[in-house]
Amino acid sequence: MKKVRTYIEQYDHYLFFAFFVLIFIGLYMQLNISSIRTQMIFFYRQFAWFILSMVSLFIAFKKINLGKIRKYSFLFVVLTILALIAVLIFGNSVKGAVRSIRIWKINIQPSLIARLVLIIYFAHILEKKKRVIPYTTPKFFFSNFLALIVIPAFIFLLILVERHFSTLVISSITLISLLFLAKVRYSTIFSLLGILLFLGMMVLFLGPKYRSDRIKIYKQYALFFPAEKNAEDKELNDYQIRESLISLSAGKIFGTSPSHGTGKHYFLPEAKTDYIFAIIGEEFGFLGALTILLLYAFLFFRSIINANKQKDLFLQLLSLGLGMNIFFNAMINIGVAMAALPSTGVTLPFISYGGTSLLVNSFSIGLLLNISARRRKI
Image (cartoon, rainbow, N blue to C red; front, side):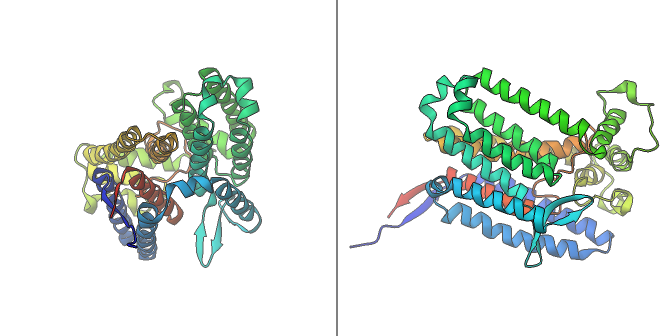
C-alpha cells in the first residue's frame, strides 16, 4: 500500500513578501543603530533570533496541524498561566517591571505568548458554540461563555502584576474585535467594553504614578490637547517623546539618510526598541515611514483576504485575530512615536530589538501562511 503524502501547492506569497521585507528592514535598522553605538552584540543577538524565528515560521507553516492546535488550546492556556506565574517568582526585574524569565541564557516574555494563546482559545470556543452566538445577550454570554471571561481575566491579572499594561491593551482590543467578528450581540460587546474601559481607567489613575505621568506627558505633546501645550511640569520625564518628535520632524519628506541621522547617537535611549520608528522617520523621511505603515496595513489586509476564503469559523477568527494582533501592536508603537497615543513600551513587530516578540510574531505569520495554504494529496 502506497503512503499518501500531502504537499502545499499554493500559499499567500504576498503575505510572505510583506513579512520578509519587514523583517529585513528590522535587521538593517538593528545593524544601523548597533554600529553607531558600538554595541554590535545586540545585532548579533537579533540575527540569532532571526534564525530561530525562521525555524518557528517553518514549523508553524509546514509542520503544524491547525486542527491539533485547536484541540490542545486549553492545554496551551494552562501552560501559559504557569509560565506567567513562573515569571512572577523567578523573573528578571527591568525598570521596576518583571516581564521575562531567563531560560538557558535566553530571556522569554510569556505575556507576548499569552496574546497568541488567547486568540487561539477564543477562536476555538467561539467556533465550538457558534450555534448559540445569536442568543448572546449579556446574561446569556456571562453564563454560557464564562470561560471567555474568567480565563482572560486571570491571565490579564498576572500580566498586570508584571507591569505589562500595553500587552493588556493590545490583547483586549483584539479579543473584543473577535467577539464582534463572530457576531456576538452588540449589547454584550458594549457591556464588556464598558467594563474594560472602567478597569483600565482604574489601573491608569489609581495604579503606579508612572502611568498617570505618561498621561500628563501625552497631554503636553498630543495634537488632541492644544490647551496643555504650555502646561510644563519639570518633574515629568518627557525626554523620549520630545526627542522622538524632533527626529520625526527632521526627516521631512525624504529623510536625512542613515549617514546623517542624529537620533541613534544616544539622543533616543530606546532607539532600537520602543522608538525605532522615529529613527526610520528621521533617516528615511515621511516616505520611508509611510512605507512601513503600508506594509503592516497590507499584511493585515492579506489576513482578512485569507479569512474570507475559509469556511470554518475557527480558521476565519484565527486568521483575523493573528492579523489584528500584529497590526494593532504596530499602530500603537507608531502612535506613541508620533505622540498620538500615550507611551506604552510597545515594540514595533519584526523591526524592534527583542527576541520573544520576533519569535512569536514570526510564528503567527507561519500560522497565517498555513491557513492560506492549498494542499494536495499524492
